Image (cartoon, rainbow, N blue to C red; front, side):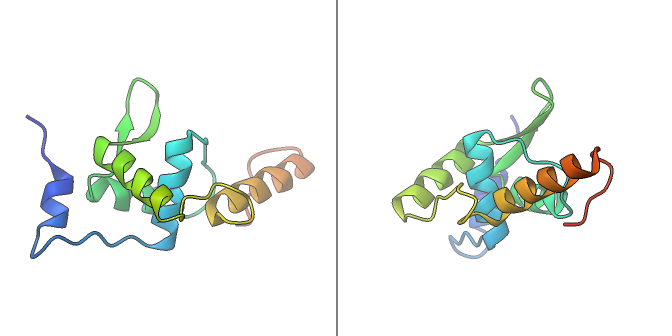
Length: 114
């Protein structure tokens, strides 16, 4: 049976789930299925979500996705009106779109200035 990382994380001393703004943004992005690679804090943010049991790597899809607990957190974010994948409200979506615009103008995807 796989480890329940979410249970382990939230019950270390008491039930507590602490998320940074970037983690909240990433949960929104992953829940919407927005492909988001190429900016500097993608791996650290996804790794933090994985350590909390909120995301995992999907070998079949070759990408990251939310766990059941992560999807429930996404629903809580919607209820709290914090779920936002608009470019104005989500720094990850904004950074990714800016990256795409910049690399498209330069003619490639090799350079990243985010």
